Image 1 (cartoon, helix red, strand yellow):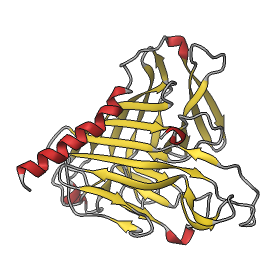
Image 2 (cartoon, rainbow, N blue to C red; image 1 turned 120 degrees about the horizontal axis):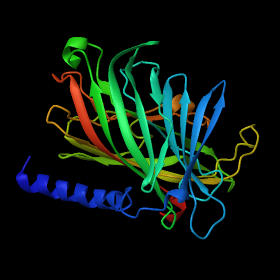
Image 3 (cartoon, rainbow, N blue to C red; image 1 turned 90 degrees about the vertical axis):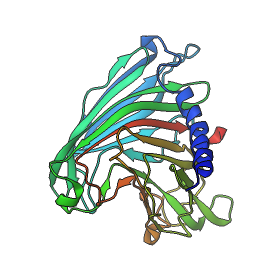
Length: 319
């Protein structure tokens, strides 16, 4: 790659990262009383609801949920005011291909002036019910009520007993972004079209820029690794007509986008982009038929991987 081309793409990355960092926790600290949490437990698992209470409101805004169920952890942002504005989820735990997500746990959230801190830890899921090595994520979430943005910054570490080459378990998925994309479905407007919780995905690394269209490339694993990866899952106005499909009607809603950035702390932690769209479920509004998986290729000789993480979710109605 020419140095000029690399510098240009790196500059684009920095400019893309600036809006994320500008709303990251710590820039505008809020009084402690403005953040709060609620814990809900049921046989299905535990949920932590994260709230922010604006100065001019008596009602706190539920801006994020963390769901722990049978060793699986999902993070669901809700930056906007639409009561049905829940959509794309982030599963921040590592796993090998074909694994069932298990053996992860989340600590009770800790409220402070900068936001709400979470700690997620466990083993790297491998197979149906076993794990290998260990991982940890420390992240603090905050909310910007004026911009309707949920943000987070943190540190992520994975330690394996052997290198990926020696383990022979395949590529290491360092997390998963799960979403829903509906193709050629009935819309509330009376037309047929595409909708769902997301539209398309933009990403780039130090040497490549990608725009993923799930219809054109249902299985998308471009070549190339980088010390950083930026992923932008763009939100969508979901106006599928489920009544026409034969189901109970659901209200149209603005679904939030999700941006996720991984920056490696060492040269061995090089990341690639991967994404899959399950076309057999392209009309099923309740399915997570999209899986976006930042990954480390199986030929990596490393056993330890460390990253800085920036997370952002914005109200798609304002985009």
